[in-house]
Length: 370
Image (cartoon, rainbow, N blue to C red; front, side):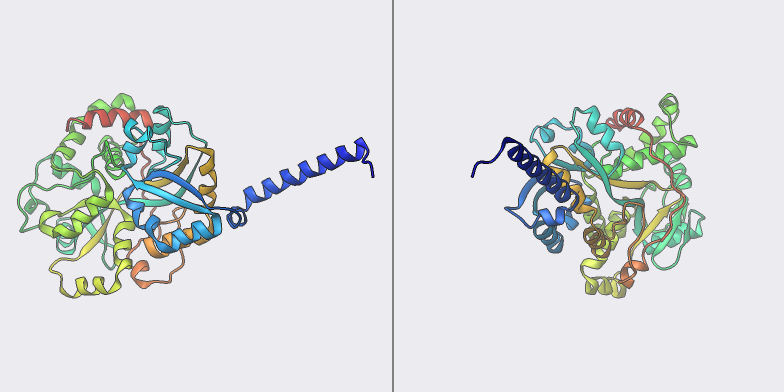
């Protein structure tokens, strides 16, 4: 039977509408799209602090089975992944640094961004040891916050470091040399990058502006010069801290989730540490601190759906329950694990914004010779 042109045209229009509607529906429900066809493989770089999350078998299973995604996520420092041509020339489809400022730095490096979205939040903290923290409390640099948690007057600590004070002078006996806090290399890794911005703003009395950077950049450089060797990634620095103990690594800069993740990975190991170790790891929350947002940058449109997958409730809960990452609003998840809940401060109100990208890039240039 012949089909009229009008009927044929209506059929094409209906098929087009159905196809468009189907695309929109699947775009809005990637967990359904992921069930059909071969999994999509995506290559990119992620900060070392997210290595445990990305290697988690449950996370990888959810990504593949529900969303049809398999990730080849290679570790790189957050700063270098958005600036270094040797990395960008590998044509990553996504980048996952640890600061929203680095989205602007990526753009200034010529990265064409399809989409970006903050997935996690994690405040910058200091890691130390119970006996060192107790000494800081007695000397008026810190206050206990219940359990293995403390708050610390970061500006007061920084001024003591700049003045060249010894550990003994700030209340800590038995440690050699001048007081110091060690971060990652700010030109490679975000935790060092953010600590540099936080230090600059604290020393200036407000969020540092470009025209006032010259007044304090020498003091910031002194803080970083006193550190000695600065590892290239947050994961490496935390591993050195755990392995070295109180003598080798008295105080370092890291993300809140790192100790939480280490404790949760092996509860029996933590019980042995609590029972037998001469010094126990503790978190010092700086007042004020800075929140490190972890934005997923989709460089290729094919990676857009990775953002939708990562902000799904199932993966955000896994990120909290097994790795200690706060959600997009800085919120914590359900209190299902006492090891986790007893180590975090639920609300962090004393937060200082990080300076904007031009200021941070100028500061990095100054610190490259520190």
